Length: 518
Image (cartoon, rainbow, N blue to C red; front, side, top):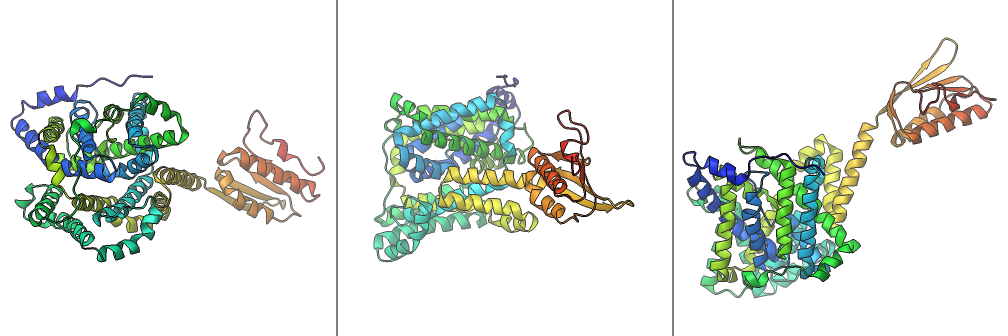
């Protein structure tokens, strides 16, 4: 295992940059902005994941203070992400809350190993269509599930049941004053989120998620509306480190599948976010292997505390850059503010209506669906659009892991099909021989077309099959062509002669070049 190249730590870089005029003030203000953006999202993601709200804050704290002090990306911010909400909810439902910490702990350890093995750069090779399909599928499941929460109803377990239950949900909501009130709060929250960017700049100093949740909370408390609020347990009471039994259960096949899904999705989302954040600023670029190690350390700590898994989050990261952050100090301070809030004002969480948080997550789910990119993608690259759609639908119908695996398989098959181009040219020589020349990559994927052309050739004339211009000839294709030549020759018709490059010590005219009657 090779070590990563050394580089100055973020803290040392931050202290050096602090000597620049205006940097401390900009980083301090940026940390407050990121804190205000992260607070409602940390709580909302936790509630949507079916765990205590404080666990989302713990993950945000670790993402700020722990990951913020590690090398990798200077300005992106880590914490609980909407992209993992569905997977966490399924894991808690299937294995229990006690196993969540063990799963996240092993996920972090795998990320550290992958980073030390310099696998960070390879996550960037994942098909963009698969990632977009993954996010779109997560967004759809998130929207469908939170619609039930907005109405104060229990959401079905599967995506198909969520869709099938929508008519009944609408009917029940219209018949219940309490459900209508909760739904009004949720849709009102979404309305604030949509309209907030259109307000004057002075109003937009307050982040949209915080403004929407704060307004919903004030309205709910002021009118004394009968809606469900966030349940508060206390920061210390919410910490549940995994026990030895939980760690022993990690050997199960189903649990390992969940761990792999956590690792793949959390790592891919973090590194794609890093690439996006690098395009937003002109500061130091991300070192992907170190960032993967940093995410692994953060998830290991979160797992030890029994908290939610973390990823780098583009919403908080972009807010950090746009607020003028220059060093990692801003993301470290945002974690400090989250810690102070969780310790000093935990009761403030108990007045937040669940419908408002559901509205925030419905809005976040809509932003995960690349609506504006689907039509141009379908026009320019129809196959990529199919991969995106199939991945998203599979996640809704089945689950996260199976959907992503299916998307990756389709991406590999599509890539293999597109690179397996072969061209057949037929020429007639003066002596009456027909020469069939193959060029390109002859693989099993193109065998049907090749055989269709060859079997249509006249059987009463000599044929020469020239493969010397083929760049790649796989075993299946070579064997099939040799068998076709032998069958053609043994039928008593004119001989087929194969002309190929030497393989495994054979001459240019290998075993299949024999003529009829050999």
